[in-house]
Image 1 (cartoon, one colour):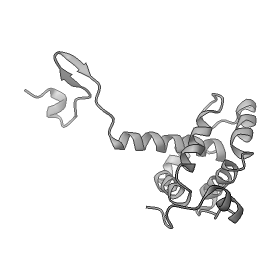
Image 2 (cartoon, rainbow, N blue to C red; image 1 turned 180 degrees about the horizontal axis):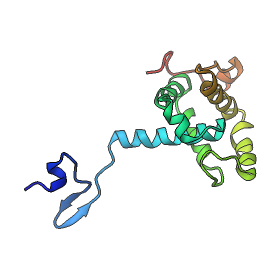
Image 3 (cartoon, rainbow, N blue to C red; image 1 turned 90 degrees about the horizontal axis):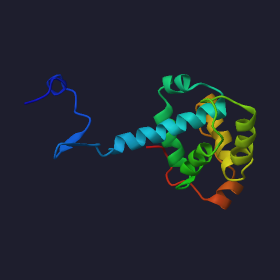
Image 4 (cartoon, helix red, strand yellow; image 1 turned 180 degrees about the vertical axis):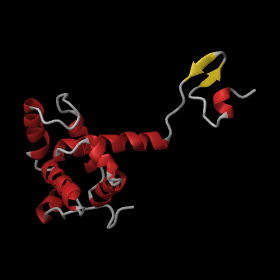
Length: 148
């Protein structure tokens, strides 16, 4: 017999096997959403805009797909991982320790710095700025010509 939530069209959040609740396996959508959330956090840190402002543009998914399309494989995730390693701070807030660490770990990095600055330009101008030929020679070329 369906539960009241199931009758109202809501899914059960867990599976029951042998009387024990088992957490559902994350689907590809939830992994994508987690990555998009990380991109919003990074973008808030770089631009100074809040999460709600960035998410409210409706462009976060498109901009993340743009990075994946124009950067060599793995570079977007390297940038997201570098941001994750920064000292804890308020979401999007610039604190002295976090700002200094962000500069050292991300903006001053010869590989990630130009990409991070282009993410800032992407949010402010709405267009990706090509990375220099020297950067592309050192770190690789785009996997795709246009975002998916």
